[in-house]
Image 1 (cartoon, rainbow, N blue to C red):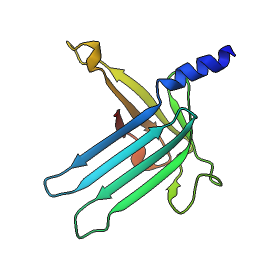
Image 2: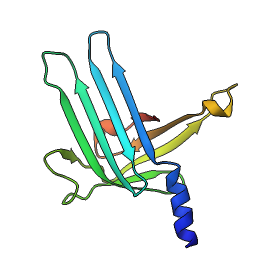
Image 3: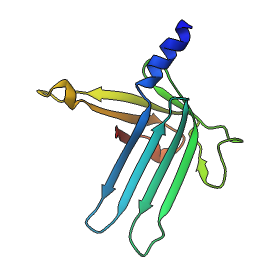
Image 4: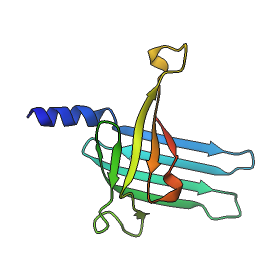
Length: 132
């Protein structure tokens, strides 16, 4: 029973929605959304619209996640999680949960985000997603 409470307390600090959106004056939109659910499942969505003459692009991933003391580890079951829509394989993807308080700021101004530091999906490495 104590193990369940400890694991639940550790993972509950990570659950929620994380994202990043950038838009240029020319109309290019890039958006990332990560949802970490309390049951240990996750979904990921990458959206890109470079310009009106190009098709909009969407890439999806899903699977399970778990937290240890310093990292969040992602897993994708190729048989259950990969299909026509969900094509990204997050197996061996690792991220850190970071809470930083800017100098001179109060605790209410903490910046909370995920920083992906290892992944077989090359463009995920270095991605920083802020808590929504």
